[in-house]
Picture 1 (cartoon, rainbow, N blue to C red):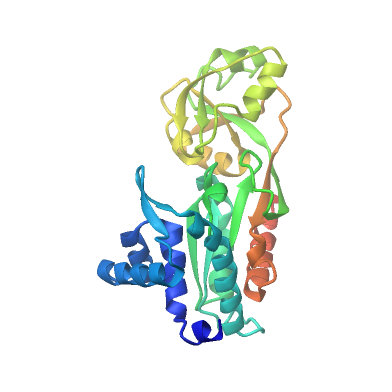
Picture 2: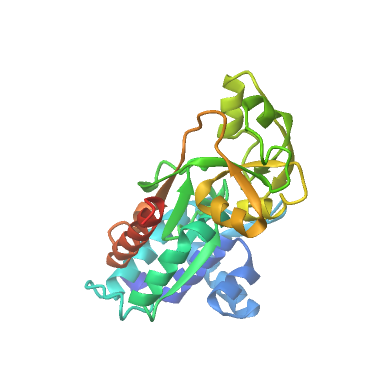
Length: 306
């Protein structure tokens, strides 16, 4: 074993992580800034090292062998621990050049991240922040937890292995075009279900808290427009008789921009709760602790109206 460690090239483990995470030689090469032939040579060396093909042809592309599936979680821990060994224990945000990774829904990006980014740029001028979209399946598919944090609404499930912290809640309102027949009328329950509705999908299933609430009241609504994010749906309301039920932090400012009217819902609906979620592999890292605190502080201020 000692002989093998003396001759181990750490770059091979980094390449192995990229190959097993991407299940694709070209994408792994792009991820590490290598050429495709160079990555293919790395794969050949790794196959010899582990006496296993690691990646084999399957339906739709390359798939992990059983040995590779065993290696991937161990490899994630090894690389994370190695990174922690190489980094200084006293984290200084003003000096770090680390890239932080954050996932959020388009709504979260537009509503909660502007203040996060402003503060991040002020206190960590040499660092960078990569923001990726969060949908209903993102965290379950994040096998090598690259994301430092995710801002998660309660309609998206978080894997049991993740750690979470509640950020706060955002209440729902009904939004419609400025010339909608209900714009100057009382929004009753009967009127609410009489018109067609917009639904934000986020890659999830057909059921929403609104429809569950209506079912409890013996009512249903017709959903005729499905959009991937809230801002798109709000922008499409003018000139239609569609109604859209949306949390207020984004809906109110965009209603002013698009000439929309907002109404109180004619039934009680629990506010949308937002959480911060992260994989425990990051939990004790000083840089991650700093990032969690910054994100928590800034988003809490937005949700509390500060």
